[in-house]
Length: 224
Image (tube, rainbow, N blue to C red; front, side, top):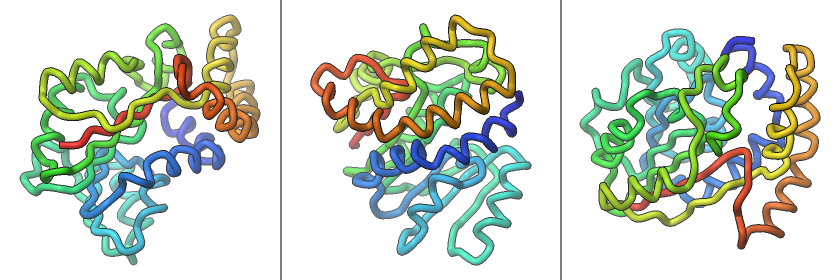
């Protein structure tokens, strides 16, 4: 199963996508830059009354974005973040950082492009111990833990306003999948089952929000 196939099926995971959007919505202010938006499934929820720039270095996704947002006032560039010199109020990495080899260099460059009081929002897969053949197939270089972002905060002098693991049901499913060799068909079924359980996952995340020690994903929001 390649990255494009995975994206196709994850696009059907509407419950999880809504969960992501609800988490980042309070911080999506002012002029927004999304790095590596893929096919634009997240940013499309924020296109009304927002100044948005998308940068997508992959030709395939760049062409999809140009077609999808042809009638919207969105700036779409085929480049990487080190090509920019404009500053933004919000910079978003949604399930992107794990694909970038020089991730710390990338985040430091993003920090430089933030306006004063700007927010850097990051969503990544959580816990390296959950890294699997599936991660490898979809070109994940690593999975993350809170300590990774605390270390960046301390070294590069940027404040954390939110950091938490989320989707505890997804975490449990990934733990189970480590013991089974799922094929493509069972992976698709697993995505459907997992998506149907997201409302339960949100409920459990709220119950255990104080301990917050498990989750399939991790969100971190920095403020400059």
